Image (cartoon, rainbow, N blue to C red; front, side, top):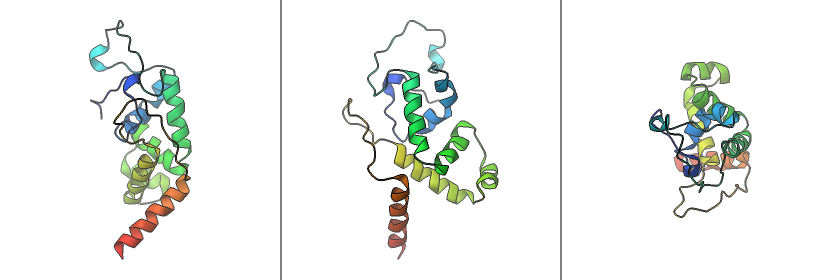
Length: 147
């Protein structure tokens, strides 16, 4: 994940981008966008935003809203991606096996991520179902598929 970097104009909240966005949440909270490794000395490049947000604080607010909708599972994502908590520590904190934690984090990422856009300019559509309903549907589908 260390090689990843997106500009504000590249952020579409896809499943691939969300872990990176969660990992830089501290920088975004300060209203700053992290510089790309090759652009650390280049301050002349100004990009016109094409994504849904044009500032770091806008992206930060959106990521926080998405995480808050997840409740406990959002906190698991923050522990794992922002604070780099190792599986054993997560098992102790959340009192469950890491397999269950990983499953819940995958469902959470699926819920808060937008599908990759074929055309730019398509706005994020909030899910009509709550996260709890989304999870109960996933669990039902898994049980049905196993029988």
